[in-house]
Image (cartoon, rainbow, N blue to C red; front, top):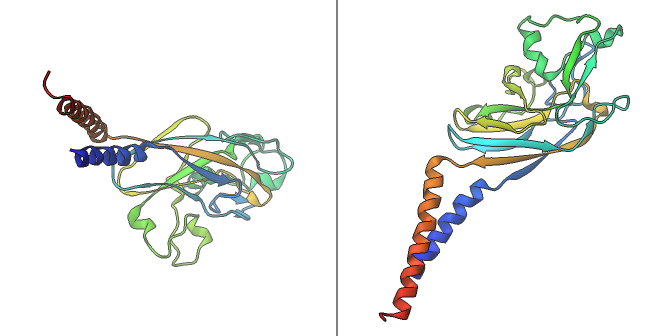
Length: 233
């Protein structure tokens, strides 16, 4: 009987550990090399950071973030939601685009040079990208822009980037894979600060049911142990 109780406790511990939140630190320079500054490759961008590993499809996590960064000495600190930068008549700014905008430049939706008065929205915001386990398992894979790698390098496709921001963000996997986190900035070499990202797994219905059964089994077994200990009245 004691072994059964211990077994139930072990099962409950394993299930509960999957629900415990995990904190990931994302530095202000972790842009993955996405985005362009003065029509050149983003300068000084480090790899995106591994945030979560999904073992299969239909696994849901909640993401929230705290902290502040600075995307340059001339800008105020910003939170995970980022800031908007207005393009003025400086030619350098007209040639720029953020990591989240890169897919639209590649597809021709966003044209460069961009007009004066245009806005680089969500600059410095927290972003993410889901990469399938098949892609992430290649030895030459790096969590960054493929354009910054060699001809045979494997990276993250720009269209896989998504805005996470400062709200509670929910993501559900479509297959086994990894979620990488980064910063939506185009000139990270003079960035400072970091975000602390908290990721919490939402248990699947089967896990909740198993948790309920495990708790019920422990309660029933303890009642039986008390009954056997006291004996019939």
